[in-house]
Length: 67
Image (tube, rainbow, N blue to C red; front, side):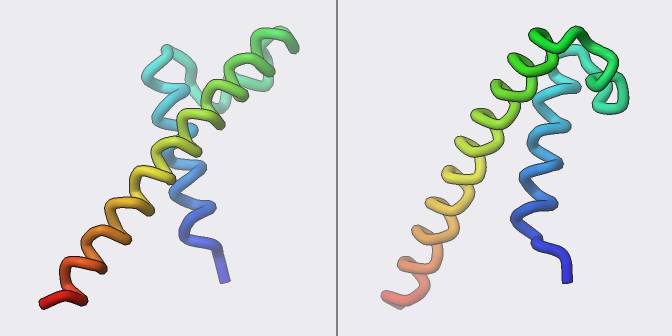
């Protein structure tokens, strides 16, 4: 079974790459320093967005639990 959060993380990384002008399939061809910097930034972006999504989900769960 696939990890839904893992799939979402990959989608967020792809979103970051595309928004910064890089097709995901082209990233491996970048110079190592540029590739590493880009992927680190994409990972930080994805982690932040995942945390935001989880916080929102927790908030919605708490609202519905109180009803």
